Length: 223
Image (tube, rainbow, N blue to C red; front, side):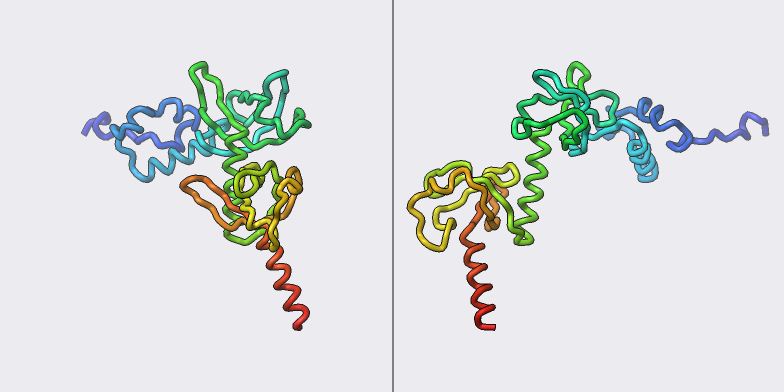
């Protein structure tokens, strides 16, 4: 048998190549279309290469970035990727003291737009995190602080973690309330009593806390 036929060609694995080189040479189109079959072991190695590559971010990820520059209109955010992201200062209107060096949560909208720019959103990241906190408060019964923004038909609109929640008039106090305006622009404690995930509606109650406090006092007196 000749030396040529006796020589075996070793398949190239992810570990045998530089992760960045592997990512650059990987046929994304064929992979996404299912044209190239990828076995489980190769897929695990591929994911390892992605995780180990500095600067690789996934779209829809919420990560922490650093403000490295502020212009008249935008904040330039570094997320340790190959390029920085630009976010309009309108998304930071709630934070008038934003400064270079601040850590902010951002959502990766697109790794690259038509001009190759990394597209980030702080507003969307806040909403996602806010919903996580609201859901957790609903499940655990945690007492949350909310800012009463304005009155509306049948109740009040309350800002909870950046999400607008509805406070029914019947859930403001244990006694009937006629003057809703006295609560506007005040920060109060609430309990999240209902979440409609389909319509993204949140209902809070201040009355529930008062009732719980009264019940606790009754038990102490009886005790």
